[in-house]
Image (cartoon, rainbow, N blue to C red; front, side):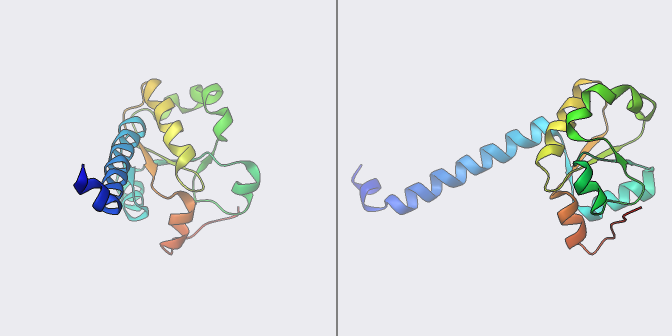
Length: 136
């Protein structure tokens, strides 16, 4: 106990580090694998992956990944039938930062989609990687 009181900063740092690792592990189990923008590009080019953008309309209008389909986060459950024909293809879910994509991946997995990936960092990371966004 004396060790902890004398080294409380290190103890707190170790505890926070452990909690962060647990949270990251749980998040990956729920959402499934996450892809960097470079990995997503490879999957799109090599395996004809479908990109679904779950951001709101105003965010979509500001720029999105070319060839992506727009299905706002709140409409995913109602529009699953539109995606049935893509069950065999890899699907990459993109949002602004990566949070909404995790929930969407979970929903798609529960609906029987096997190859579902979240774009780590969302369209923000895509743009930071120097990859283009389109406004068409």
